[in-house]
Amino acid sequence: MKKNYFLVALFALAMVSMNAQIDPFEDDMESYPVGQPIFEAHWTDWGCGGGAGCAIISSAAYAHDGVQSGLIPGDGTTDAVLDLGNKIFDIWALELYMYIPAGKEGYYNLQGEVPIGAGEWIVGNFYFNQDGAAPGVGVIDDAVGAPVNFTYPEDQWFRIATNWNIENGISLATWNMSVDNVIVIDYDTPFTKADGTPPTSLGGIDYYSGNTNHEFYMDSFIYIDEEIDLLGTVSFEATGFRSALNNNILTLQANEEISNVSIYNMLGQEVYRSSTNTSSVNMSSYANGTYIVKVNIEGTEGTVKIVK
Image (cartoon, rainbow, N blue to C red):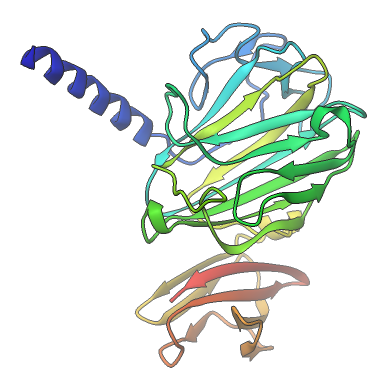
């Protein structure tokens, strides 16, 4: 019996190790055969076999970029999972685009571990037009501040951006989120359920078809180990902007000249401003805490959060 327990433990450890290897990725959904289920790399499912009626489907009906996207159809059975790698440290961000036809519904939830067993709903159920009763309206039902309501455009592609800060460990993790470039989960919100229960890890996202009225498409996935701009100025991503704080020196880099830099504390107070080309800021005199850095790069503005 001891040998059997050892093998079970070894297998479990191997599975955790495998999932820890999920690295940053981009997926424009163009590489999959149209009409076929997607069950490879970062795409899996909730233990239902990886075939049609279970995995996300490659579709050419709508596309945000290129000619294909991923479809969660109204079959009431599709249970696709985007594997985020069971993360318990660092900063992680996911950006994607979603399309929901008029009158249709969408739904997903966050899971604490992939592969998913019994399931660990770590933060919220995310509903779009819940029960078909509120077209263009969404709600997160189990998170700090829940219910968290938001709006989204029907029959249009809209952006969903989420940041997770797990630098202080998963039990102290925070997150923020925007829908259609409007912030719906504010900066430094505890990444817990409404009752304060933290997750075991950032496992993955379960995209589920709850009934025959569910139909939504997703495209242009970007999963990275750094924070992204919630406000979604698409051209800002093309500036190549990067920031790093080491030994109290904030280093700023971009493809073009950084013409303006402003730094704000979490009370919204401006603590630094420069209107000249700026590549570094000495923050040794600043109190420890979280700051928002706003930059202008050749007329394109964007923001990042840093923790000192």
